[in-house]
Image 1: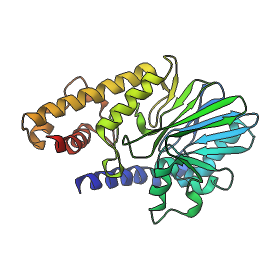
Image 2 (image 1 turned 180 degrees about the vertical axis):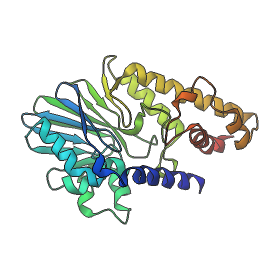
Image 3 (image 1 turned 45 degrees about the vertical axis):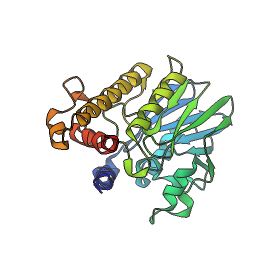
Image 4 (image 1 turned 135 degrees about the vertical axis):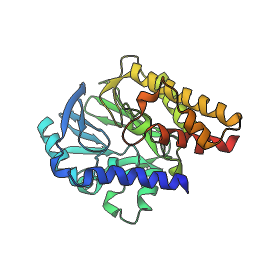
Amino acid sequence: MKILNLTLCFLFICTLAHASNFDDIEMKVTKAGGEVYMLQGAGGNIGVLATASGLLLVDDQFAPLAKKIEHAMDGISSNQLKYIVNTHFHGDHTGSNTYFSDKAPIFAHQNVRARLKNQAETKQAALPVVTYEHGIRIYLAAEEIQLSHFPAAHTDGDTIVYFTQANVLHTGDLFFELGFPYIDLNHGGSVKGYLAAVNSIIASMPDDVIIIPGHGELTNKTRYIAFANMIDYSIKRVEGFLAQGKTEQQILALGIGKDYQQWSWRFINEEKWLKTLINDLKTSH
């Protein structure tokens, strides 16, 4: 129940924080590499591939921002939207699905469609129409886009999107560049699965890959490795405390340690991160 409450609280806060000021949100466009751009507004970062043959959109934030996203895309290219990819099911990454779905097919892991379909407020038009189990490749102009699924990580439906020619990776929420990650334990996520996914992604990517994280600023592999090291340290620290028989309150009092306190941020502060670790890891002790 605590896990469910944390999940609902996070999603509610994310939505509430932006709902009252969507009118004030401006879409920031940053060129990532090649023909790939990053769009930042409210919610998860967006990726846009703009080719002479059309556009591909990775994630689409909240529904009230749909027209602003479209306007930002028009500023990059007037060519037609051809494909949409959802990296996972959370509303700050899929909220504009309904708006864009009549313009292009939505691709996502099969669990994303299942999760969205189970939400009473989700319209049929918002559902992905092309799903896969492990991954899929999309070819657009000269670009090969590799979609790869990682199970039991941030959720049970996570996909990363790698633009091979541009050497740009969109991680979805398998990377919070700005701080501690949110791991949705109530919807198939797991702490160790998350770390395993991050380590696998790092090992598979070129050292000079440009990274669009799910949240945070455009970044690189060095920062991603630092993120992985933080998670690895956090798991070992909490597992050690649990093995010693320490209670949640004792672990919270001991904290994450001074080396990683600066990873605390607005939605996932040190306490929330530690509680996520405790809730997920205590079952093995």
